[in-house]
Image (cartoon, rainbow, N blue to C red; front, side, top):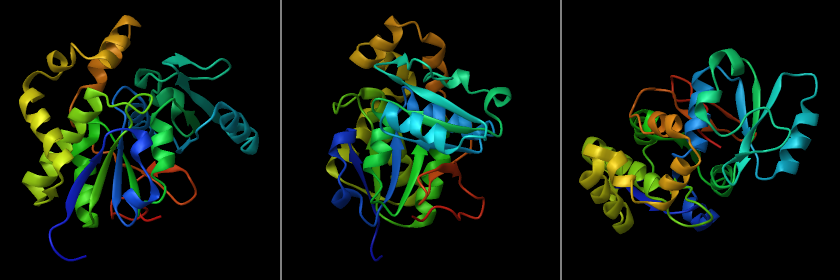
Length: 252
């Protein structure tokens, strides 16, 4: 590639098309809570996370890996799926519970955003908790970037936009990336709200829906910044594993 690479933002899973991500590096963001869960699970030693779109896909995948230690995790409309082992709370994916396990994972928005991004050159999983490490991996690849906000029901959510804005700011300020108009808007939103993200989100619909359901601890966990340097990477087999320290495993 020639010239300065550019960072773009897709504001919801439904915006992602093969043309939008082709030959680009992608970071999928679902702060509340799918990508925060995936980062936590991989950080805590899960052998792999297999994201799937439907509950039926998850059940079929469990049968495919019969004989291995497989956990089903995820949600529909924020609620744990009947018969699954885990919900969509990152706090449930402890090292004691998930170490060495294969996790088959399906959520309303986040796993669909990953699925829709499959035409990308590389796909990373990002959240506030590992955003700078993902930015470093994106910059090392040297390609144009699309930050994919999962959103909710194909609508924009402010927490994903703030995380995308934070990452756009890191890519621009630290690595010299240019920004598209929407990436610049997200970056400005981040710069205006970064000193008190919870307060910035306090009037937004998705944040308050999570609050109404009582997931206060999840919110506090998911809004922490850069507590991990773990970079989960979605590979050509459709599995998410930890990116190798030498950067291998990122091409599809």
